Image: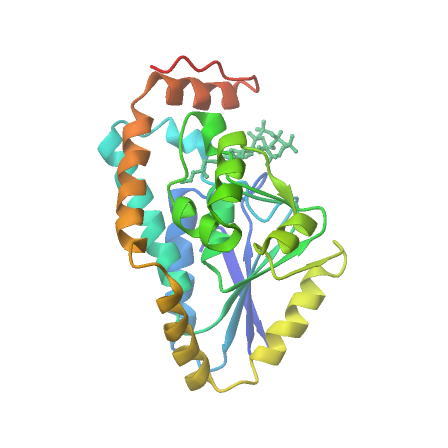
Length: 257
Ligand SMILES: C/C=C/C(=O)SCCNC(=O)CCNC(=O)[C@H](O)C(C)(C)COP(=O)(O)OP(=O)(O)OC[C@H]1O[C@@H](n2cnc3c(N)ncnc32)[C@H](O)[C@@H]1OP(=O)(O)O
């Protein structure tokens, strides 16, 4: 594996995302998330997974620079569908998955974190879905998962403004479980993970399965609609402008074309 590594400590697999500078989720990283799940699924020494990022951020989202290699709306819909599938596997995985978020979890980075069962954050971490700033919409399940945690109005505010919220706010809003200092995040997350690792794996697996019924009946329809819309917006001139503006480090000018 190129970008992901893991080690096991007291029943907890500590999985590190390392793709400097921003741990942007290329298609390669998403495939590696799937591969890590394969690797730990039947390993009895692993009872809980903790996902964290090396460097400045948890993850700044899908790799925007890779978007310039995508040629059609259909390919973009497929890219979203693939990410959705892997993240759905995280959410329905047979073992608890906890995200430890520092720096930033933006776009696809937050979508990955939202598919984990719990989120521990640093107080100053930035959590957001800024895709509209790129002339896009979230495509890895964010439009369906964010409103489940924070309600439709706050999800709309976060998406429409593209402004992130802090880790401390994320706890108040119900998006994150607990906030810690930068120095103590991983240690505190591991304390909780190791406590969970002592529970029966059979009971944990069944509890995760039962939690899936908390999804609204329209969840999977919503995911399909999101992936389709992701492809629809991608072919707009506004999306080209948004992606180019990010690369050129300038404000985009959207015209509605
Ligand atoms: C289906 C899913 C869709 C999506 O997820 S779309 C992507 C959504 N995410 C975003 O829009 C976040 C974009 N990034 C940012 O807003 C900022 O960056 C940060 C807040 C994360 C950090 O800001 P700062 O501290 O000022 O650093 P910096 O110079 O902007 O970034 C450092 C380097 O990281 C690269 N980078 C950051 N995010 C991404 C990304 N998502 N994809 C590809 N590259 C990224 C930059 O370009 C730059 O690189 P260089 O040093 O070469 O200029």
